[in-house]
Image (cartoon, rainbow, N blue to C red; front, side):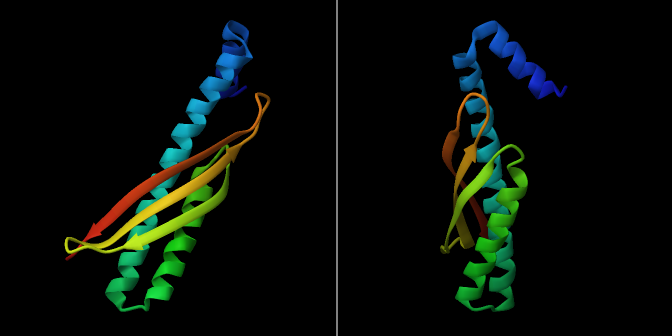
Length: 126
């Protein structure tokens, strides 16, 4: 039995299913937030590489989206990425600013959990 399974079984035994669902929601939220942040950082890094190389904007956007989806999916160990949206911009200070919005789903004995979270990352101008 994994430590997480033991924790869930203990919470159900001690507090009931309602409290267990709250604990699982908190855990899912933390995991989804971490996945969104890592996804934004990866997308910003990939976009910056391509911008410096002189790639066209459409290629930069497609690569950032692809990188973001891959990283988000890899970091949701218990959930599923329903959608990943990447918004890219630039500023006088930053070469690229990226905001990733991740919609994730979690299943389980306590019922489905649906979350939408965001991650933000930037790469400063050289």
